[in-house]
Image (tube, rainbow, N blue to C red):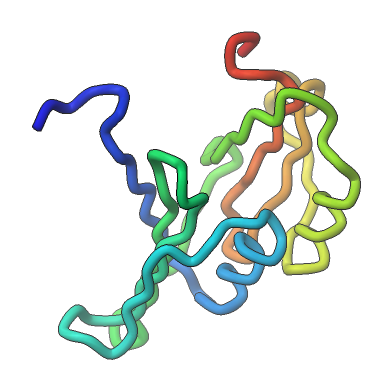
Length: 134
C-alpha cells in the first residue's frame, strides 16, 4: 500500500482525564467516537475520535498504571479550516465542555482563527480561512 495524500493519519495524545477530553472533542467540536478500548489486551484506555468520512482521527490515551502527563506547548496546534466565520455557538459549546479560549503567541492565528485549549492544554485552532488561502 502506498503512503500518499490519502493515507490515514492518527494523532495520538496522552490525557489526564479521558472522559473530560472526550466531552470536549465530541460534545464540543462534534467529533464521533470511532473506536474505544477499555480493559482489553492493550494496557490503559484508548479513545479514537473523528469525523467518520475524514482521513484522520485523534486518539486519546490514558494508562492509570503509568500515566503520562500531557505537556503541550503554545505551538502544539490542531488546526481545522472552517472556510468562513467560526460560529459563536461552536465556541460556546467548546467552552461549555471544558475548553478555554486563549490567545496565540503567533499573531496569524489570532487574526485568522479562534484558539481553544482542551482540558489537557492542547490547542484547537478554528481557522476562518480555507485551506487554499493558508
